[in-house]
Length: 247
Image (cartoon, rainbow, N blue to C red; front, side, top):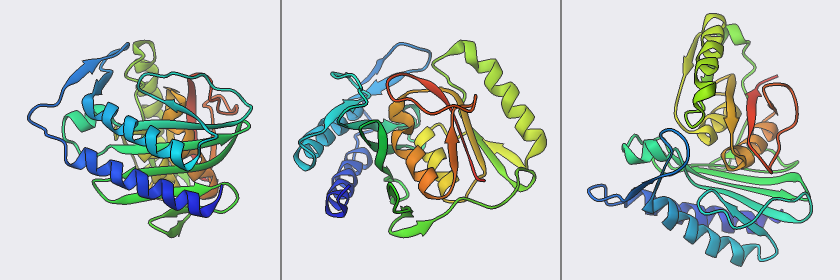
């Protein structure tokens, strides 16, 4: 990934963050999608449209895969932009200020670059494969604390009711072994929190590729490890579980 193109992507994502910050909260249009508490707003669509237009200008050779209204399917051949316009839509609807924009770039099946931007805190996380992970241009690293002195982040897989109970059972097991647990509502932000050394473990039993395409590379470039909960490799053509941790 060319560094100048990375700067262009960051600038585009920062501009899209303004769409979120300037949302008219008195009249947000909300639609439901498949799954419990699975929503999409007009701003998800506005951000995705702006990202698609801008990213295709920066990387015209890439195939765009966005969470809202997926038009393409993933392949291990070629370059793909795997995008979540607003990760943490329920938080966005509730004005909870824990939502972000996530752009992952996969080239021939390999994670090449990732950008995650939280406009509420003006935190721009990014990584290029082999070049380290950064927060607002400062190099970041995972924590070196053991689990007993760590914080565990988790997601509840709210769209998949059959996984809810198991998610909380796992969280309780971790709670007994760690200092405490946290639930933010944004997988991408949680992954970046692991990368920045703010927490030691993150897990969720089912996520979609746009939830982790960018954040998983940022964790790895910060020195962490990301696999499925079962210990396998993440996939980008379907949902899977995610476990991110320090070493």
